[in-house]
Image (cartoon, rainbow, N blue to C red; front, side):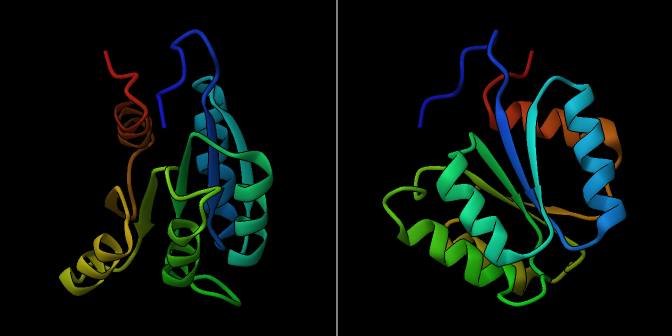
Length: 131
């Protein structure tokens, strides 16, 4: 998938069950001129990815219902979403989780918590918009 033109607003889908973190990350990205969509569980995240076709997905691993690993697997096995980069953002610090996420097709693995500036820099880099 090509990176969006720098003048356009990139679409970022956040799938996170921690409501405070979801809203905080959403506000930070919106403030930095990204279009965002927020989902609090894996099932709604999958539906949003298919319908909205974001430029980037930020995905937590621990989710109610279907977990982030299953969401990632389904995203990467669907022709409609397989080329959307998925960045796993999680509190898991184990190397085993990172390897599993990479094996399923994650573009990157970012540990929580993170500073707002770090999140924005990383999202811009993943979208090819870094200065």
